[in-house]
Length: 236
Image 1 (cartoon, rainbow, N blue to C red):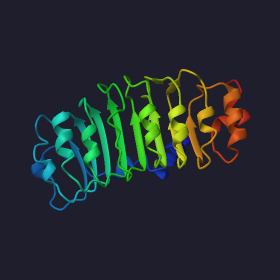
Image 2 (tube, rainbow, N blue to C red):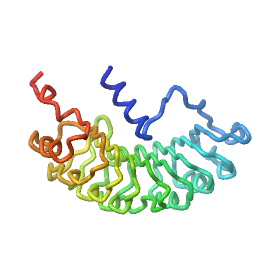
Image 3 (cartoon, rainbow, N blue to C red):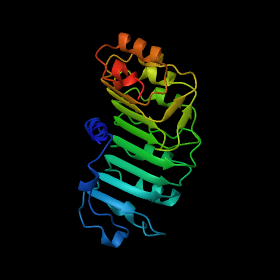
């Protein structure tokens, strides 16, 4: 429990997590959205999202059950700073590129997305999390997001995300926090992280050889990663 709590604390500090019990109450009808609200937790039920694009002034949106039409309406809200999308059935997320103030984007459970070609190109984006995109196996588009400060690329609790390599991350020289929990990397190499001199935190599973962690520790001695500690490799 302590480890889980620490893990969540690190995510919140890195801009990729929330105090879930402090979120606004879930709203399922646009007619119930308070006027002039800046933070909204909305779950689509059928067409209940119709009109949400008129919520001008909204800064933070937690959106659940996001189909294509819901996504298109969300992206009419040009004031959005933080966008959390879960239960995503939309097959094209390119519309997020039209959000000029977007700083934080989290996409969870987008089972129909086959690639990352839709990733936002605006330089305002500093914090990005993609979780349980089980059809995505190539991280190449991430190499263009050189402004990122925090990044999470992860599978779900039960299903790993599988990618060929971490090489695209070597371009992210401003990265301070990286979360790759339940991410299976085909070449088993952490070498692309050796040049990330700003990296302070790596949170991951023991899916890489011990030697890979030791080489990374030598390359980045200030990096915090639990697998750098010998006691964590002892048999239990």
